[in-house]
Amino acid sequence: MESTSTRPLWQRFLVFLGPLVLTNVLQALGGTAITIYLGKLLGTRSLAAAVSFFPLFMCCMAFAIGLGTGASVLVGQAWGARDTDKVRRVAGSVLLGTLLLSCVIAGIGAAGIGPVLRALGTPGDVLADAVGYARVLFAAMPVLFVHLMLAALLRGLGDTVTPLKALAVASSVWVLLTPAFILGWLGLPRLGTQSAAWASMTGNALAVLWLAWHLRRKNSLLAPAKLREHLRWNAPVLATVARLGVPTGLFFITSSLADAMLLSLVNRHGPGATAAWGTVGQVMAYVQFPAMSIAIAASVFAAQAIGAGRLEEIDHVKRVGLWMNLALTAGLAALVSLAAPFAVSLFSNDPAVIELAASVLRITVWGSVAFGMASVFTSVMRAAGTVRVPTAISLGCLAVLLFPLAWVLQQALGLRGVWVAYPLTYLVALGLQALYFHGVWKRRPIQRLI
Image (cartoon, rainbow, N blue to C red; front, top):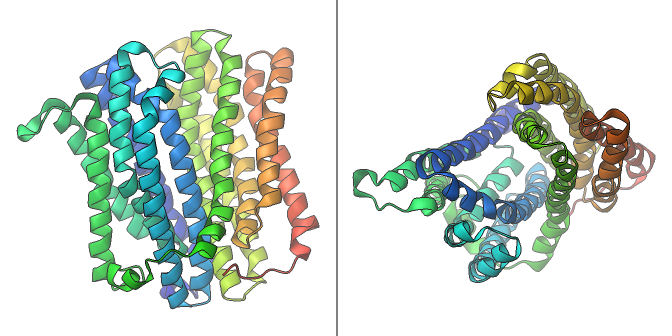
């Protein structure tokens, strides 16, 4: 980090972004590979059993990601001030809190998942497999959450390479162990649907062990020996992390619920429309990786600037983040728009689905640019501890505007109008976030959070 401090900010952004985008892609590819294993090697029932638990799992993941966002802000501010003792105190209390929270979630979840899946209408012929799969994933949550939190803390220090290497360890184990458990390679037990969950637990555990070894070898601030005495319950630090991070989790959950409501409109147009929806969603997940990564970078660099007392640099971080979105996210959007038929053909062989998905992809892909730019504003404000109004804007647009706008546009433009609602909603959110940032927030005094 020290060696890059004299570089221009845009160069530091790119150095930070490269491994972070690769991390997101690797995570997505690992999930895709495991889904293919379950569907191809075990069949539809096993795939359905795993998918049945996926929405609940994503809710747990959303809050873990949110807490990681809050932790990276606090560590970023402490690192910007070069207060290494504060870095260790924050990291120690956050890791302890994460471990305790994940154990509570794992215990409650494993005990109550059966009735919950039944209440959600999980088909009876896959319920037992779904419950077994979910219980193993709940048991794996402590190591998964610790892995995610260590990655977030390292990003707060400006290190995105080490989390990428740790994920490479975990994903390699997932990809190799899942078919090994399914087929019983090398004398391993055949674990059926639970194979992917056991592979996930093993991969994350090995990633955490690798991180402990690597950080010790590098004499990092987050090395286990340096954190041991700081593994204490610190209520003020944990409350600040929750205040910063919970809104991010709520955003992901609200976004998922809004998508589900829009899907109800699409489903009325038949299975071809539903297939097109899923295909577009697969491509959009990859298109949004740069936008999300730029937002994380903006949050970290703004937090470090605040910690160092360089408040004039906040505007610079915001401008670089916006320009990065125009250059990277918009560039990728243009490429995907041109190659839309090829992109969607990777996920479907149906000519009608490909034609519909390609046409709507050219519409929705541009929403990623507005989404990314709005996320820069919210990330910079979050780095200073301002979350209430930016979160209200983001959640309000998703909860109040997206579905009604999609319904109205569907009446006027037909099926494609549902997808037009996405870029329009993100544009409104961008305008409101920019107005609040420049009209109100910049007039406030900015202070360190800890």
